[in-house]
Length: 183
Image (cartoon, rainbow, N blue to C red; front, side, top):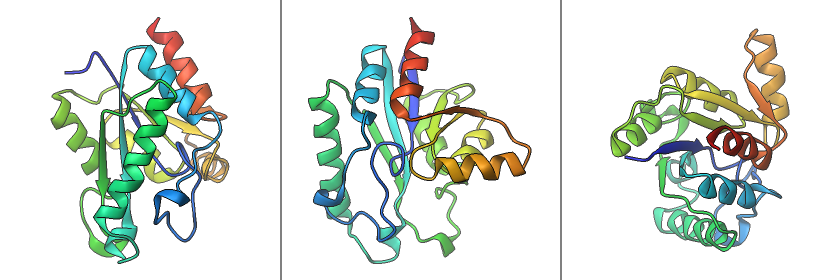
């Protein structure tokens, strides 16, 4: 059981998004400061997990082997920066699949809770989309929005819903706040 757990979305939080899906390790490009943010969380004693929708698999655009290669590259880059990603939970289904694991449904987060044997009440979940925020709220986690990726559009959409959440410029800034809280 981790002493402290933080969950991150992948695309738009750790790495730049692609409208055509990230299909190869070469297309995976970290957002400036994100790797250092994960390293900061690791040094502060957090166990870092990732919860990511990867519908490119269900759409036939990428296979699991390619996704695993992308995740190996991501983990290496994080390790080179001094951080660690302990676990990656992903939904491989297309949006019309109706599964429970595709965010905004809470299945991925529940999978991580079961793996770690913890309640997600108050556990930070850092994302850039309404799906991320809604999934966090569904399990009582602490939603944190970053303005990278789709974050600016999400901030506007949440405001229209009358929903205010913690908002940070990027993962590095959110990580710094969490590290300060852990000190």
